[in-house]
Amino acid sequence: MTKAPMNTTTERAGDSVLVRVEGEVDLATAAELKGVLAAAADLGDARRLIADLSDVTFFGSAGLTVLLTAHERGCETGVPFVVVPGTESSARRILEITEMLDVLTTADSVDSAIS
Image (cartoon, rainbow, N blue to C red):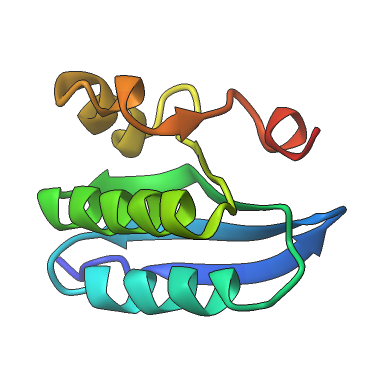
């Protein structure tokens, strides 16, 4: 069985930077995601950084570390980090189990995260 790769896209969404993540976030892909989020945060005048995890099919503990790092950076820089975990994604289940939904800023959809 071939493992699904992780794909990301970064785009401007109003005054925000949106990073869409698809596939698997695990030990093999977490460093890449960390780099993508850091690069997106460095784009400049964005009011917030949004990570859309709606299409994540597997979300491991290494992904939690990446999200916490981005959250801490947002607190330090004053640019909020918002996670859109999706309604039934692997990421949402892990964030619920670990109670990280109470720690991270989340939104139900990309549209609500942007507004």
